[in-house]
Length: 247
Picture 1: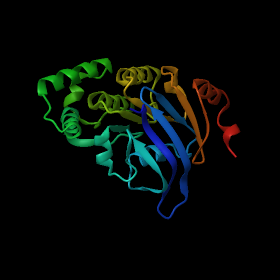
Picture 2: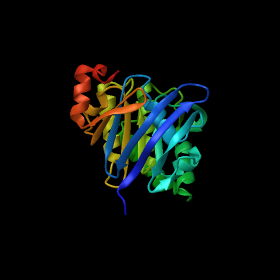
Picture 3: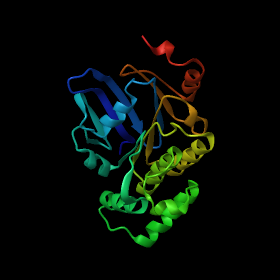
Picture 4: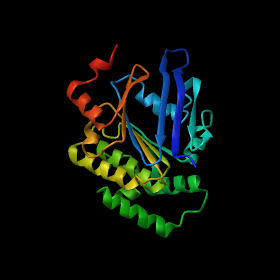
């Protein structure tokens, strides 16, 4: 049985009638690994995440995406999610009228295909909210409505823990967070992480890496991965920026 969880093969992606954004991306993520994609604004980081989930705004012109041994290149987004890929958003949506509890209960039911055991579910939800230092009353509030930026990001990590996917893609999870909130989010990622799943963090800075140590760091510039290394590469970028990797 292969340890490879996600493999992106020579992926080219663009937006209809606009320029190509990703230009031959190759990436392999094994079970048990944390990968980071870093790059300046506009380099294609968020496009990579959206391409994995097959957001219809983005068009794949060539290449393949293999997940857990299956070609998911052209599957619908909801089908990909049910296969075990989770994505947290840079700017989480507010959904009035649907509570955090109801949203998570419905999502878990759709992913597992089994009825949610309410007592177990509420106990698990309470435990995770305490770990993430979220106020218990937030469970009964409309999803992200009136939440601060930090609370929205914690709520994304809460979703990750409850839904327990095989692969977590975290897009700019550290954006706009203070030091304490970053530590809490990092703790949530560590709680999720096992030898059987994997994490892909997308960021343009190194704040979240102060509390997490990735296995691989990839530098994405102008739609191409131009360098792959360890956490030392992230530290170098923190000190010197991306100028040496730009054409």
